[in-house]
Amino acid sequence: MPRFLHIADIHLGFNRYDCPERTKDFFYTLYDVLQTHAVKESVDFVAIAGDLFEHRNIQPATLNQAQKCLELLATAKIPAIAIEGNHDNRPYGTNTNWLRYLADWGLLILLEPSEDADVIYQPWTPHTRKGGYIDLDCGVRVLGSHWYGAAAPSAIAQLADGIVQLPKTSEHTVMLFHHGLEGQVARYAGALRYGDLVPLQQAGVDYLALGHIHKQYCAENWIFNPGSLEANNIEESSYIRGAYVVDLSADGVHAELRRNYRQRSILRLQL
Image (cartoon, rainbow, N blue to C red; front, side, top):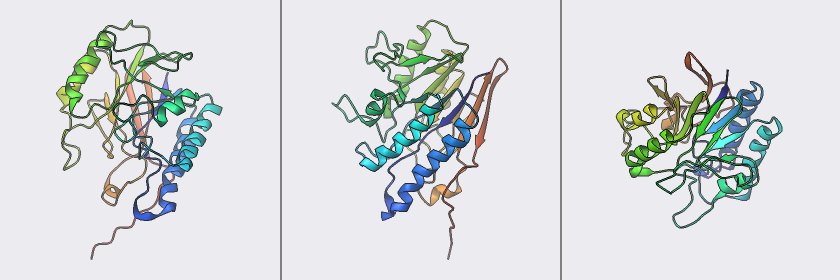
């Protein structure tokens, strides 16, 4: 039975409040989550559904933090599979970013669909270290996506068409998608409706691994968003968030939200 860890919105390099110790919290949190809920539980892979980094341009210390965490997985022979989020996607007109750097060094598998509308999904290969999907030995196909912003609804239709064209060689299909579902948090413009995502399920996606919204939620036992690992602001201190440990079987999806890892405690006072 395949088992994987689903995390999102890690935001390494978070640097608000002019507090270096606060920036380190995001590294300590990620390392503890990977050690406790990936390595110790011997998951088959780790899915990172966007925003590994807080910024597109990062400091050397932030890159070192990412490398140390990913090397932990590499030592345990656990693949880290990632997509870009809105915080760490490549700027328009450029062909690389820091996620691509980590991918080229073999520390993660970065899944990127093709921009060719006729063949959206090409298989990831270890030779090129590029591709839009990968079939893992554990019997799971993992599909990637880009950060689409306001174009997400139309992009979903193209992605669904691309999925249907693929040969069916894996028992389970997981897709990583960095976007939010409406009705989860206030003041969030551009959220997707549930109906916008249904074509992905109809195309064969068993587990849609979301990111972007920093609050845990799920829908119809196939759409899952774990929330950010660490609170990015005081408001998020009230959110339930964490990391999903997911088991896939013939009976369906069993996703358990894990919250027992190192986080900065928050005390909120109202006067």
